[in-house]
Image 1 (spheres, one colour):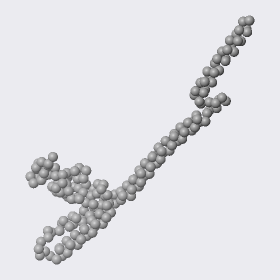
Image 2 (cartoon, rainbow, N blue to C red):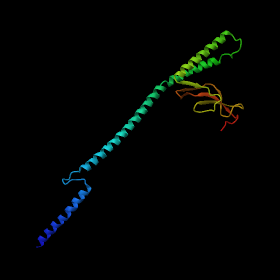
Image 3 (cartoon, rainbow, N blue to C red):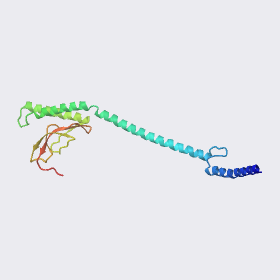
Image 4 (spheres, rainbow, N blue to C red):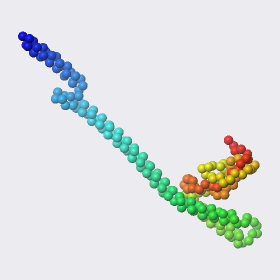
Length: 200
């Protein structure tokens, strides 16, 4: 009698648990009666994967665009500044030409024809030479009267002056040379000291 009661209780327990398990599966909606995923769950999973792949693709595309931009800039810089050493030698020749012109006697009325022709030849050659340099991105700037800038000027001396503001360039031995806006050779200058204070 005891054995029959135990079997009866086990059957009642199985019958009670079965509806609860079915209800749980129905509530989640993730499996069918055979244990497979429902179409809705599969679609949601695939959509999540698509979104993940899309995000990875967009990141990769952004990185590739940054790489292309950086490579283009590096190529452009290499093209513009590959001649930097040669350009320094060229501006040295330009400075020698300017020194030769400056060494001529000051122009006066009635000067000898040879000196006048020599000066005209120097000046014409200098203008032509500087024009060629400018067309290739090399420019010069005479800094006299400007505030001393360590990024563009090299101070060779300081000199007391009451006629110039303190810290301004009162004399330039050579101009400032740049290549496509980048410093090629700083100007060698004399800086005023002890004069009128520069405006704040």
